[in-house]
Length: 290
Length: 183
Image (cartoon, rainbow over all chains, first blue to last red; front, top):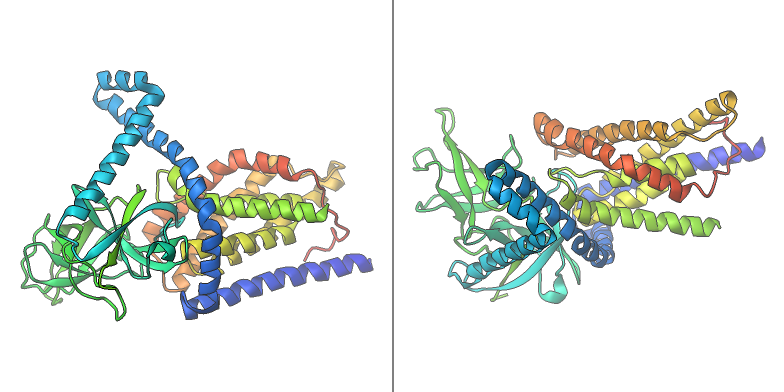
């Protein structure tokens, strides 16, 4: 009876301590952000998990590619019966060829970006995505490069898009061998952008209605903005201490423009160019003057 | 023996956390991912008791929040509550079964039931706490893009994983003399 009572007390104490520890960490995280104790825990955990994450990511990548290939095959079936048969015959070779082609295409896109004049004055660090947040509340990814490779907090990160690359986010925290990137769709993200061919600059933040889209704020009603126009990075700092983004990196395209008499600014919705569901290889930009 | 078991659970927690952030996002077609850690917590709650599940959930949640840049302690809090609640429920069900069927093994279908309830509770709890912390998303988006796909994916992954975890964890029966005194 006494032993049973002791166990009961011990059980309550364990659960109580765990709940108290969780709440304490939550409070510290809320107050300190990525600094202080929580920042140290975060960096330590990232250092420990990054090598394993990279291995797991590499191991599961072919499965993901095979899945992607299979879904592509289903689409091909619907569109073209002959293509379906060819792809089926190709079998495993088809998956490999598809993977290599996609990889080559992404590398070419990033190479085009490096050779373009859009981000002159910056060095480039190639990186692979090894982990990402499991939900839409925090939009972050983890890269396999860290401070040992020259990556620093606030460095902009771009991902393949079109013939080059589009802005994906900026480095939020870094350890020796890994770094966490806050995507431009994260609720804490804010980036200055400009409409291509116009002078007006606005602040791009995740749309409150649909967090997979962006809203361009502070564009006056007298500015001329059309649906389909591209939005590029502006050479502005959002916060003191932020790295200066290279001018002219594509961010997205305007998909809707609204204005009302009650508001002095237009309501502009922007769809990002980068496919955030399929992030594998990216470039971290490093200011040469730093 | 106990040390080896603790080590095995620690490895399971670490591997599950790594898989949840690095493999699961690749293997699912939506933004949402299955809550692999919750599946482990449910299995531990049934086979090792609520305290072990809560401790494992705390460590696993901390690891996931640290790597993904989320609010630290948020996932831990939810997993601790889920582990404790499922453990307590499983204990009560075992007591009932002991009285009626003469044995105290929770059937797999009950584990699935716990997993479904825990998945819904954790997803809703996560959404509510995110809202309270000022990072809530629109309700429609939260339900359509996070809660519903998250629960469905968790259940889908629980179907093969729970029997696997049952095999991994069944070797040690719970030592418990306070079965009739739930906390």
